Image (tube, helix red, strand yellow):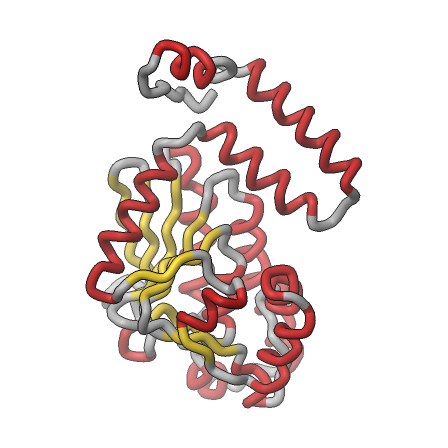
Length: 260
């Protein structure tokens, strides 16, 4: 049996590929557990950037509804699965110090879309499509969608997408801020590799603290953000990388980041 998540580590980039093409990369419990395990172990193996994508021309079609029905999941069991399997995976995306990129080629709908929204950055091909399809089956967005969607695109647009289940294309997604960048489909993989490669060369301590500070800022005040920024800068200056960026700039050479 083929693994449900393919793992490739190269040049300090960990590429996690949802590998269920027979169901358009719909996710199940095993898929979510494997994603979490790989995210949580990536920092220790020297990875600088994580990329999450899907096999073929689909990112993810959402949850594997057939499996849910075939296993006769009860309301109580559905709640347990969300809390004990799905929630830890989404928390791992947010708590990882590494930048996490969702590379979206094709459809990203339902919890597949919300998996992408929980990542730090979203890169999409021009054939990508997005939809919060939960309302079509009488549910609300889960996987953090009711949090990430309004933070990214505003409450009004979030309400529209969540209440209508409308599918939007990559051009519209870029226009409203749902994704960061859009690339031609035939150049997509190379473009993702180039972007991830660029991030992998940046100062890891700065990236980790930038990520933590920006997400934390959504919860607190402007004053708290100022204090947090000063504290994180102090941590970086106390590290071995502390003034390497300044020295490299003055010496007109690329910085040599140690990440400690």
